Length: 246
Image (cartoon, rainbow, N blue to C red; front, side, top):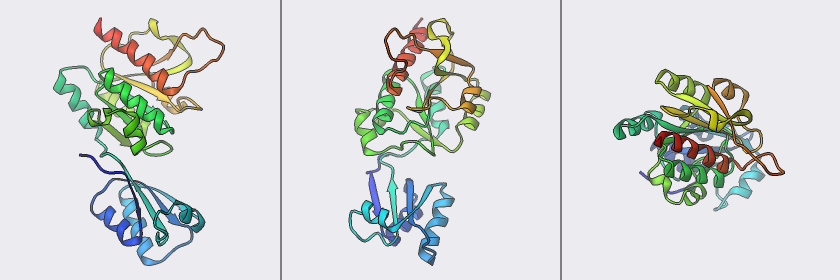
């Protein structure tokens, strides 16, 4: 099911969006506003585990498309998020060992869209992203994915480390990209696997790196020492594809 990307403004409209079950990526609330309707919206947001940002009224004025935000603006997702179980089911239905992308804080929507596109073309069964400090499924992501979002499920989770622990119990191994790791051609990347790609600036976080079973480096011969996150995802993904084909 597809959602149109929406900026929802006004207390009644935002409250109704939450109560109707619409996927809200982020809620912006006027800092210091304590009246009843606003508190009801904040309670609904917390029940839905939505990210809430308390901002000055001036920020809301800048964001507003109507000039009638009434102290609250919500950003709704462009597409519906899947569950992690949906991704595992997709692998099972194809009779294939799971191949999943896990993205640790990809903040650029163009990078996220490009990675989803690569995941689809590489035959991955889905993508998992964290709820906080990461891009959501915006219209920019959808456009950059070149239609891949229609076919590749994307799950959003609160805790990426816990998700990895749960998937390990289901038999998955994890490999992350890091320039200090083993050259990717020397690693056994077959079987049920999760490919972990880190943040554009900081790479894979320490706790997530510790949960990875393998750390892969991409051989580089140039004068700079890193690849764009979406390019690194593509290079490693296709080494996994090569090994799965063999």
